[in-house]
Image (cartoon, rainbow, N blue to C red; front, side):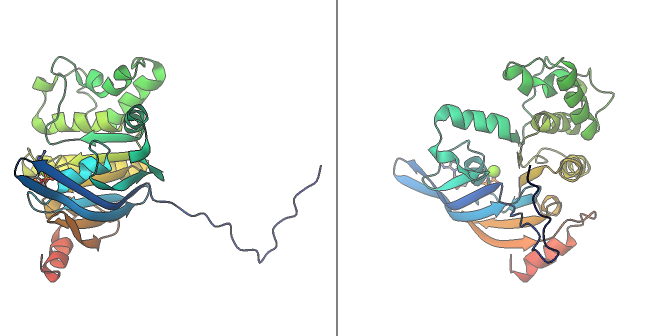
Amino acid sequence: MTLKPPPAADAPAPRRTVLPILEARSLTKQYRMPGETVDAVRGVTLSVMPGEFVALMGPSGSGKSTLLQLLGGLDQPTAGEVLLEGEPIGRLSDSDATRLRRERTGFVFQSFNLVPLMNVVENVGLPFTISGQDPRSPELAGRIREAIALVDLTGKERHKPDQLSAGEQQRVAVARAIVTRPALLFADEPTGNLDFRTGLDILGALWRTCVERGQTIVLVTHDAKAAAYADRVFVVGDGQIQDEIVLGRREDHAAAPLITRLALLGL
Ligand SMILES: Nc1ncnc2c1ncn2[C@@H]1O[C@H](COP(=O)(O)OP(=O)(O)OP(=O)(O)O)[C@@H](O)[C@H]1O
Ligand SMILES: [Mg+2]
């Protein structure tokens, strides 16, 4: 057996290049309707690194949801491409794209979309049930418990959606989206239907998944107070990324620094 010689003291440290988990290249989306074409997304290029929390922030109609749908593979671009973990998702077959989406991504929307007849544990375990796994197996039951704890709903496991507040229901939706440990979590205005205080609970839950589990998050919001939770904010306007504001990771989520930066940019 030959032993590899130890690296020379002055040898450069092995380079570990971290690749973006998500990339958009010149993404364009046109909605064609009789007598009208809407340019909803107009040449967006961006990348997201593993573990990052980014926000797409912009006014109503600016193309945020369309962009999120393209990034999450829920819709096809008119031109350009999306790469998930380096793989162009547009070139996958429908079944491979569906599998990739199911295994690698999670979604939270403004409406919680919980199953009314199912309790918290059953709702959170739904992704396992759908993929033919037994959510009561010790391993998956443990993961469900962990996701419920992360969104601070321990003790409410047997509650059905109509026995929960709106904010608690949305936290169930967050737990359901992260229980499969997706590489990427997409959230479109997850606090949109909630009052300010309750909205903060949801953002806090998203933030904890990011800090405690290294969850990568793409959050769509029109609200600077929500975007202030992100490490980086893409300012969306008229279907384009108008600016990028790096906030860095902070324990303090005060919106003032972001609002100041936006004002300096004239936004
Ligand atoms: N299915 C569709 N068919 C035609 N036009 C659409 C469709 N979906 C969105 N649009 C248009 O595309 C543009 C961008 O819409 P989008 O929903 O992405 O905006 P948004 O930034 O998410 O807005 P909001 O904050 O109100 O949710 C708008 O002009 C909208 O009217
Ligand atoms: Mg929207």
